[in-house]
Image 1 (cartoon, rainbow, N blue to C red):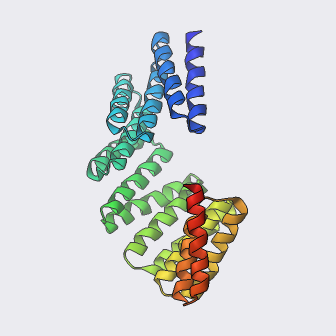
Image 2 (cartoon, rainbow, N blue to C red; image 1 turned 45 degrees about the horizontal axis):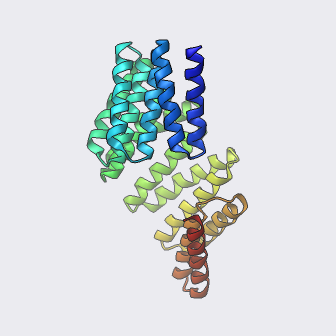
Amino acid sequence: DIRGKARACYGLSYVFSFKGNLTESENYASRSLKYFEEAGDIRGRINSYNVLSYLAKQQKDFNKAQIYIHKATETAGSIGDTLTLADAKNSLGNILKDMALFKQAIDIYFEALKLWELKGDSNGISIAYGSIGLMYFYQKEWDKALEFNLKKLPVSRAAGDLWETSKTYNSIAQIFNAQNNYDSAIFYLRKGLDLNKKMNYPTGIASSYHNIAETLLRHSLSDSAFFYAQNAVRIARETGDYAIVDYYITLANVMLTKKQYKEALQNALKAYDLARKQK
């Protein structure tokens, strides 16, 4: 059963990628592609191209990643599979984003958006709005970045996607922070915090506390910032969150602002020790 072998290799490729063994993952992804080709399974081929592109991107081989994703888009286009083509376009946009080719990435994300809109795919539309907004953010086009994140918000809400809605609140807050509009930033960060609590997502709660602390610190509200930074560190300690290094650094900055130099140094040293252990 060639198709069965193809699917098994495809699954093994994912397992090895989760384990961080990219060499074995690529080996099985290549084998899955070979078997899918022998079986005449076009969608299987597209999936294998996507995985191989992702693995190349993880290894920073962006030229190779683009070659595979172009094969995926060509194959999806040849069978008129609109949603698969949109997914492949989005992946190409992600590659261009990682190459810091933001203007090219925006063009590709718009192409993916049009395809998702054609099929009324709310999840895809939400992804495209977020990606386009991020590209404008990287280019410091704050108004455009805000426009697309605000477009994404009702789509995510309507889909009942609390995770994406929370991420969007955070993105909007970061745009307001970049514009030194701290009150608006805190308003959206607290909305994100409420959703993370609703999802009972400790890592997200800690991240929200940290982002609020950073914003309050920029706003010169060090006492309030201390409360949120301390809570971020506490939750990260309980959950073993790797982001605790950043939280300790923020807590050190808070203590520095409060002129509590001994405590500032202690937290900075904790961050340093943890960062070394994490390499």
